[in-house]
Amino acid sequence: MKASALRSANLFQDALPPETGERVETLLRRGPLHVERIISSDRPDSTLYDQPQDEWVALLQGTATLWVDGTEIPLQTGDTLFLPAHTPHRVLRTSADPACVWLAVHLHPIKDTDAPA
Image (tube, rainbow, N blue to C red; front, side, top):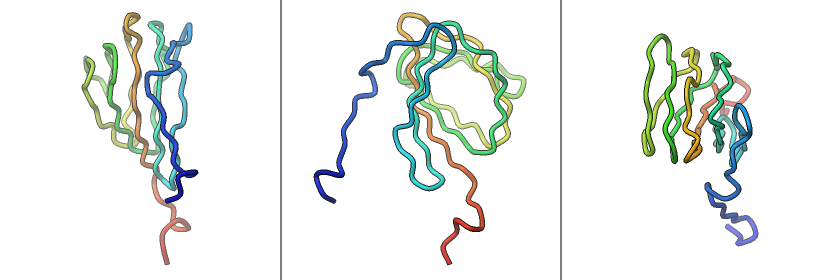
């Protein structure tokens, strides 16, 4: 791999939270694999997610409580959670100090046109 193709980044740089909701930044997209950094405010959006892709999240900083298919799940720094596709979930609470910083990995379904021949 050429050095010009390498790119380093710091997950905590420019991690100021938005006033409400969350800020999602794509770090990597390779086929069905998407990696994002999410910065949450302490006033989460009440959106109910029901995504067509699997999602694995790691809470890198802060504390949060998620509602996942009828169950409240508290998370603290270092916790991870796997959310299979079509699992309804929402963010109930997130900490203000420190703000929540997440790493999210999405694995999108492979379409027949994406499969190798």
